[in-house]
Length: 379
Ligand code: ADP
Ligand code: MG
Image (tube, rainbow, N blue to C red):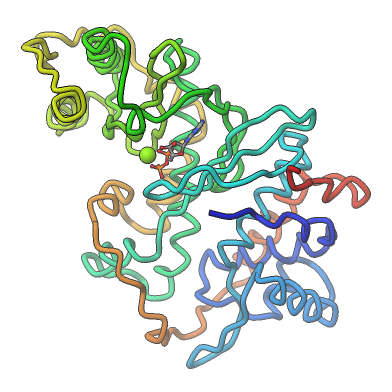
């Protein structure tokens, strides 16, 4: 586990940022974004853009690749990270980036600080090109669209996580306080505690067991199911009180498989307690009898912009439950990079105009150059 080298941010000018954002935009409908198109979207001289793209490639924020039919640029993971970090530092949400504290199934977790030096937690969502491949095989995707999908999937996952965390936090659930989000990056309270997976002993095992089962029921009473309620997504504070994390897979209790998800969460806790504490209880919640829906968190979620994002995504890919389908995939084979054979997709003036406007919009968040790149590495 390493550090994100944020030093490079200091040398990124506002124009660099705009160019990188233009690559991001171009990837909406391009496997590789041709240089002249980047210049058009970014609204900079095409002479200047070439040099900037070269510089950005040198720092691995984007990469230049040759396709069979045309050449162009694609945004790298690192480039996407920097776009998010630059915005969050410009909004003065974060002041420095520290070391990585976790690698989740589909994320990287870092300790960061706010501008005063108080610790926060940063989760970078990384939903893969790899798992999306399955989805592509199942449905006939536009061949130029599958590869940029990691951008969308990761952003969608972050948006969803933030929306649920915010709604849950407002309803008084023990979850980290959400702070802000941008693209695939979520900033939240750093939980002062340890994942249950690392804990060998607790003071009162039956109490913890019943706290956790109560939480599952309380979630359901509010119309939601966590969906991945295991020892890696539960943290304990120094009073042995649980804090729940990791929300991208949450589902509504009105989902057709709600009972299955609910029972699975319950079983996760039972299995863990048997394994770790040799504890068994005949008490466990039942979806039909114990859940009394008293509130629907969906209202807050709908107001959060997440639904709009989902809709946009579905329109882009003509899919419904992309995240759930990809999560079921456990094969992590590498995408074969050599099969790229896409033609340069067509783009009309309207598309370009739209991407240009969006780029403009995304760059509005940034302050002037002098305050850019203040982000430091935590000592
Ligand atoms: P994933 O979706 O990839 O599983 P998680 O949200 O579960 O990611 O985070 C992975 C790990 O990072 C957790 O098991 C936990 O150890 C750590 N972590 C995540 N969020 C926080 C937080 N807010 N405070 C402290 N540690 C956290
Ligand atoms: Mg997790």
